[in-house]
Every structure is written in structure tokens, then in C-alpha cells.
Length: 148
Image (cartoon, rainbow, N blue to C red; front, side, top):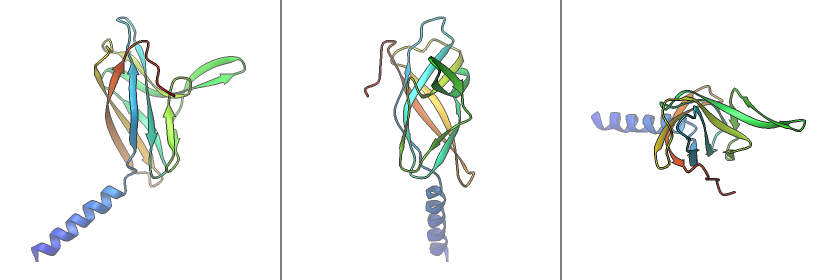
């Protein structure tokens, strides 16, 4: 009687974990800041096997974190907050300088090269289930630029 219960419990755990989007975060990084700087940017590649949407970002090093997009308006590059970023199933979405990225505001400390900064990304799938993914993001030098 106990053995069938264990099999059923294990199967339900597998099924419920497979329901999540399983978003992967590749090559995350944050540019170092100077001592008085109160904002910073985080960059990475996101990929999900199922369609999902990045809807929130949080970090203990910042008073608030937001998803932003850089876009040309006429001949001026402008940055603006967005409500989220769609991740199409099986496709990589780059968060990079000059496009979508994470902005960290009201920094509580200087971000120094070699540190690890925790970021919690919140995703919502088509089924409205939320998934939090926490990553440790390395701080890169002020002069760092990601390889294309």
C-alpha cells in the first residue's frame, strides 16, 4: 500500500515541475559602478522552452529594479520602462546595451568588479503561473562590453 503511494507522489512532483517554463539565464553581467553612482544596468540572455513573459525584477542591492528598452525616436535614443518582455518558445531573447535590459535604481552600495549580485526574475506563463528565477550576476569592469 505504501509503495504505490510513493510512485504516485513522485509522478505528481515530476508533472508539477514540468509545468513550469524552466527559463534559463545565460551570460548574465552587471557593469561596475563608481562610488556615488545610484543606477546600474544588468544584461543577459533569456530562453524558455514554453512561451512566457518576464514581468518583474528585484535585487537586494537596489531600491527598485525595472525592465527597460532603448529605442530610437526620430534621431534620439530614448530609454523607457516596459511592463514586460515576451519570451517566444525556444527562442533566445537578449537583454543588452541598446535594447531591452534591467535597470537598477537607488543602489545601496557601489557595485565592484568581482562581486556577485543576486537578481530575481519573475516570469508568467500562458497559464498565468508565476516562476521566479534567482541568478547570481557577476559584476564586470567599467570598461567591459559583451562579445557579440
